[in-house]
Length: 255
Image 1: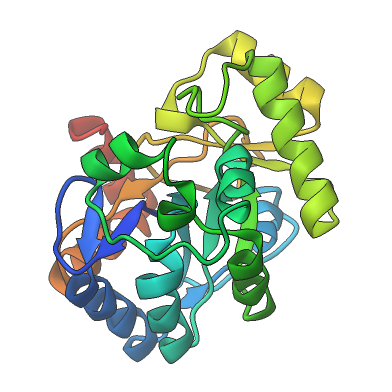
Image 2: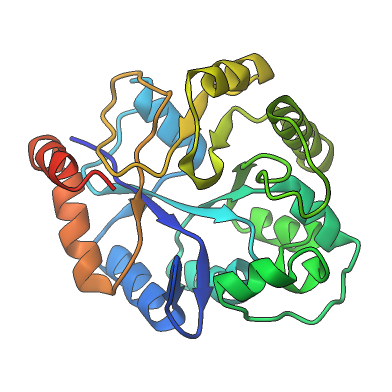
């Protein structure tokens, strides 16, 4: 078997580029809950990959990238409603900047507009640590997505700084040494993998579509970009929970 890993970014009233609508997202989460799916924590997924934990056939890992504030406003209530877990990969520098503007009015901006406003109004667009704490208390996991996403909103960093500062910030803010890293935009090479391992990361997540067997291979976790409604989700889970079918489909549609 394989455990599918779903990849989300934004959840907003209207769907768009790397954005699920609230209606689509709720339909997908309702499908998972009504059909007996178990949403894994990131650490459970890691244990599964290492062969240390047996999971059921209807297991899935839900992930969000970046730490957009709409995850708290729109996605979090849906996850709580259906009793589902998720993992959010945080760009810690963005969360730090947003936390200096606690009380800023939330702006439900589509991705391109959000990026254009990010450096001037982070509190309106990104999660702050108070919101992270509330989500964490309800079972949402938080892990690393570098400190600045190589976007230079709040300064330019080397790869080594991106990795070290992200891990240090999570340790200071959330109290644990993180071992999960998601690559910004899915961009990495062998040198980047080596740097991540040197920084203390054990499992590395990509944007590549594919299957995830319990084979101990941790350098390139495959994920599936979410789109559409529950019909898309049902088809996708059926494909990527199956080693053979998912493997063939990954070759035909690698991204």
